[in-house]
Image (cartoon, rainbow, N blue to C red; front, side):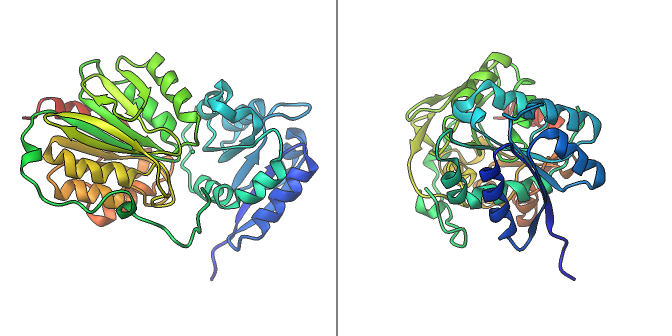
Length: 358
């Protein structure tokens, strides 16, 4: 028997946007539109009659704004929500308020040409809805043919064994995350002391959002956090976050690490790609690295984590119970890439364990 389709509730005050989103979702065989509401009050009536699997929510609406509605949902009856709004552009504070309130994913809608943008972004929208439908909610991210999924070979060649690159005691932490990762990363990074090993992070986020995300974390953490720039050094007490829409690779010059930020095609349907970062860590850090794969939909990072483990690195996958979406970690575990499985709350201790190794 075929699985039940994902039932989506659209909440947007624009009739044309509701029409476009309905057409996009209805064209997918595994989805259907439960209802389309012009404001949160109408949406609340639909939710009272029948619970959707996912809510696709605008923020700027009459009678009640979307952020207030999101907070009410998460406080009364948590449901997976994907935001689709003009208020999210350029990594606005509204974005982080919505993520903290419990939004699973966000889609930036331009102020002009929204209808065309939505039609061109149908793969991104549907992937976000599928990821949200699988989310575990805890109380209180150039168009390519989706059928052709490239791997890290398009950015750098497969790893080769080398001895010279292992002659260093400098440790480096490599983290990959996607759906649910923004708040999970906040929980991990704010728990780290200022002298923790250098960290490089790929979090699937749109372009422009990563700079604001890094700035927000920098204000919350003891360590320094910044959006990576090409050539940035990696050192103790610093975390570098790959910029949206650019790949980030770990590289070595003598005993010191730095990052390379590059353009390139989507890898595992993402740019930046966790697989690309992890492969570079396997080649340039080997046993001096710790790879951590966290919450997210899909399999980006699973093969790269396996390459890290084969190169002698320590590897950790976040456990199912604390993941918002147990996709990427699950794929890594199935491949045998994860040396250990850890709850989100235990990941800071895994990082600090590397500080004492030689």
